[in-house]
Image (cartoon, rainbow, N blue to C red; front, side):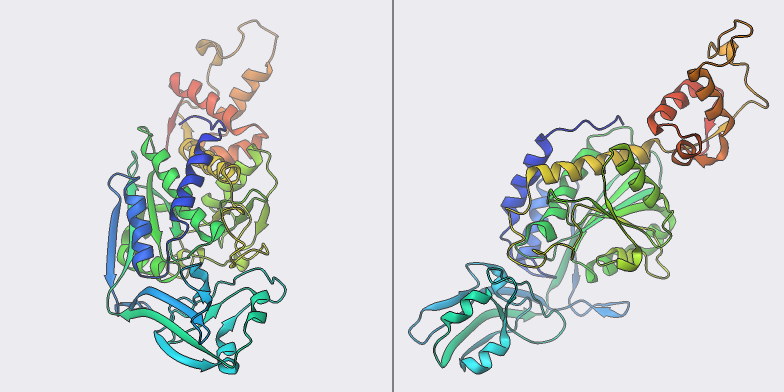
Length: 433
């Protein structure tokens, strides 16, 4: 793999995909989630859509019933709709049970969710695991409710069905794997979380285009929490055996900030590579401790799983005012935002692919002059290049990877990669892992 060169081509393509799936009514289950997976399947060869039955026990959790919505609205008794699911699927609280009745406004108001400090925003709310219903609307629209009673209609179904998720394995030379995960359960919001699935789809295409990968890349699209737990449950042994690093791809579409959420260890391979990538690109980023976790890194780093999965983001979930509202829309994300996320992730892949461990084959200092790696003029000493070659070779002890070596020697990672190629060509070193 070669170093990443920025372009706006990928960002435009990813943004176009975001527009295409934006309005799908995604949730833990249901047609909108399946349609999202089907969209991804058309972009990626060998992508597999899998399903698991409602009621299945997964550790301490249970797969919920499948939820679908035909229509949902609140109207006055003259038939004027004041809230309509068809206008924006955020209007309906996720997993709302069916209802069709006339309700007094004093009772209806208890089921209406607004944000007073953001009067133009529709909040995102859900009730996955308890039987309830509700509507969300802009606070400023509460003034439209002037009657004593309103008709409430939610034509939804909650019945035994399936939860769907998707995966693709991009095979490299090694059985060791990098895990990349995103979640597909959020409805019409741009950064959280249309951005994750579309960026990860494009990153999967990037990886599929490479024919000399060292690592294998396990790429999954799951409903948040319950989907990640299900995937762990079904693939526990192989994940524990093979996964050496990885990231939850979330909130990667805005063009405001960069963020990194660390693993529990803080010094895992995932952490080292992500922080090195930001450093090489000279990008400022906000670092978050694992104690500030909030997405599926919770599951992948949970006791007994301990996969050391981090999360590289633009502005992270929960830390921008538009989060979980209708203001996290297609205007909040952009091709430039996607391009920045694409570039940092592809650089991360390049670092992973080049970050090997090497060991000297020669006892004592190699006779560099024989390999034309040092001047044979007596008394001239080391020049900068020959000194760097000597220093790199001296620290190749079979235990130190190239990222750690670049820090020890205060030498650019890719300068070390060049030296490694020279040393390998001259059969002075060998790769250990």
